[in-house]
Amino acid sequence: MLKAVNRYLLFQRNCSYKPIKRPNLIFPERKTEPKIEIPEEKKNRLFSQLKARILTSGPLTVADYMKEVLTNPLAGYYMNRDVFGSEGDFITSPEVGQIFGELISVWCINEWRKVGSPSPFQLVELGPGRGTLMADILKVLSHFKLNKNMTIHFVEISPHLSKLQAQRLCYNHKDVEDQLFYRHGETISGTKVYWYKRIEDVPEEFSIVLAHEFFDALPVHKLQKDENGLWKEILVDIDSEHSEKLRFVISKSQTPISKIFKPNDDDTRVCLEYNLETERIVRHLADRFERDGGFGLFMDYGHFGEKSDTFRAFKRHKLHDPLVEPGTADLTADVDFKHIKMVAEEDRKLIAFGPIEQGTFLDNMEGPTRLQVLLDHSSPEARENIESGYKMLTEPSQMGARFKFFSLFPSILRTHLEKFPISGFFK
Ligand SMILES: C[S@@+](CC[C@H](N)C(=O)[O-])C[C@H]1O[C@@H](n2cnc3c(N)ncnc32)[C@H](O)[C@@H]1O
Image (cartoon, rainbow, N blue to C red; front, side):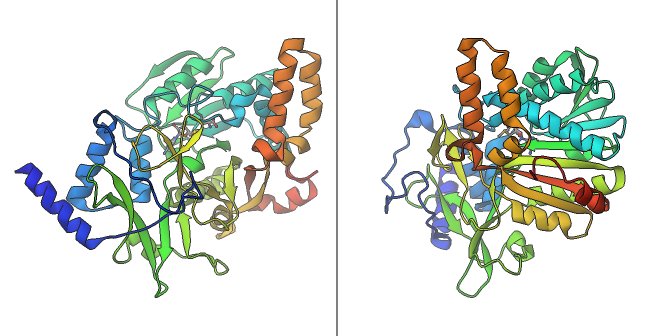
């Protein structure tokens, strides 16, 4: 009976949605897709859940699909595994070498001093991964004896990664149920650390907010203009020819998101990615920085409002089809810094700096000088790694140009920052 209902629902769906072609990011030269048969053992539990959801309530927005694939409590990509490094699916800048975190730490100290060294202060990190960036930052802050004036606040959705962070940073830690934070701990040098699911739950105090490769993991809506100039939404549906596969289709009419979306006046794109979750967090930061003081540094790959189609998947350091084996590969989309800037500055609460390329930022932060100090104090075997690591972070052909730095400050500091420009963004 259930099978018959499923077949009927599938038949109805196939008659109603128009499939849509996306550029082939994995094999750009291919005009047609080869037929893929998915072996029984590769059909996964998340796929079955997604299929049931689509059959009962219709195709999913790409944002709903991305959210489910990355953060489903049981089978989401980030929820139960360590995904970083040569054994994982991708490597991030903090994992390349300690110099990255050290230079970010120097940036935080410079800017904190520039705004009058407010004390105590909160260091907030969104999506801290293995906790490597914070561990390297903390070493420098402890050196300057600032670790006693501050508390650390992690916004992390993954139970597995949050445990890695606690093991990495804390001397002791404990899970709690009756607080806005779900865990707290203490580092060996006595700095208190707290974990939250949402930035809204972090206490309302002066905060330095860092986000490295966080915004690219937040769900995007994919919008496309039709021949009448109306924005429609690309959705994820079950394939009409293969009920064990997913495909992209275009919505029949406007969706709630495509209705509320307002492009910039000078935006000529007919296809783009819209990140409502990023917009929500930036609006929250605008209120927070204006009310309690603070500033933010975002480090991510992204563009300035010119790219159309960047939604993709990575598995074992290679591009992967985002609709195949959901939950086993990372899903990501480039950050639209132009949109963030527009949202941040629209109520005149914030001023934005950047985006500038990672290589330029690290060099402006005296990266080569710090590199030389590290080399002078290293064994001959370690030197090669340190040097190639810095090259990897800064060379335009490697991570130096693809990754961008972007910063937000309260606009009340505008005149002050014109006099004392923020470091890293200016030579
Ligand atoms: C691409 S990883 C980056 C990790 C780390 N910042 C680095 O660069 O090595 C994304 C991080 O964001 C977390 N994350 C993803 N979606 C999240 C969400 N909606 N709320 C909180 N954390 C999230 C992941 O669990 C992971 O720690």
